Length: 349
Image (cartoon, rainbow, N blue to C red; front, side, top):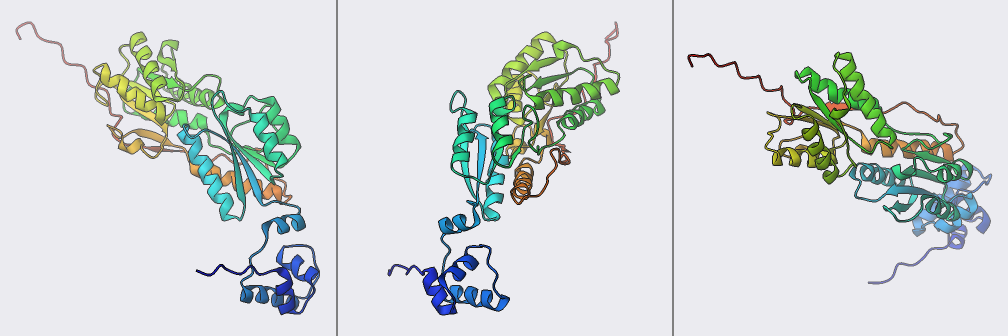
């Protein structure tokens, strides 16, 4: 198979009857004043010859790299991974390459990754890593050097935030359980240090308070976003409050462990304990039983982050707090009304 011939700008210029400099600026997006007829002649010549632009040359002319940096948690966080993958796909759809720096537990420092992306002359950065939400060094770098958007609030603000109403997420999940008739509702939370955890916990408390139900501390158990952490927290809840009939879980990943721990304890879901979770990650509907959960628009969050960043790169003033994306309760089979207590036996029975 013959190798495809590389077509240079000089060849395009000769075909169009213009200077090399004029052809180069038109093809690479530079600032050049030519008539529409001349510009069209250059573009037609390029198409006829099969010219493909040199991205390095184009970046030198435009003083941009058409590259976005993405700081992300490792792929074990499925919720963050969904947003990150959608962001990368959306960026590429808009003609931008993506450089990804993954933060592994105990691994690379967030500030080091951001500095490396800046040194690579990315046009902007998207932060999709909960690990950096309290990192003041990362926040300062994001504010100072390039346009940036984050999926988590950064200390000190100043970086546009894209996300959902996590307080509403907690309220929707708990309201659903209350509506089914549950009054002894426990919750398996994410790590308390996380903002999303606190927001979802506030939503849980709002729903209980609105229903005139108490929120004793023994109904709250901290998890760590993993199935193992969800199972451990569930065992703690059952030990503290054996009479609970429902559990609100802060993530679908932890809900896997919750279902496992309930099975091992001889509790049927949803007959003995109803379970409602958050996120609606792809396999939630294939668990046993299928998981009732609050759908958080994870992929749309990633796409919206790209749109906001591209507007900022273009010089547009963007809001630091754009409208929150909506969440939605997805009802499946893991939640049902509590069992009715058996009627008291009569003496002659």
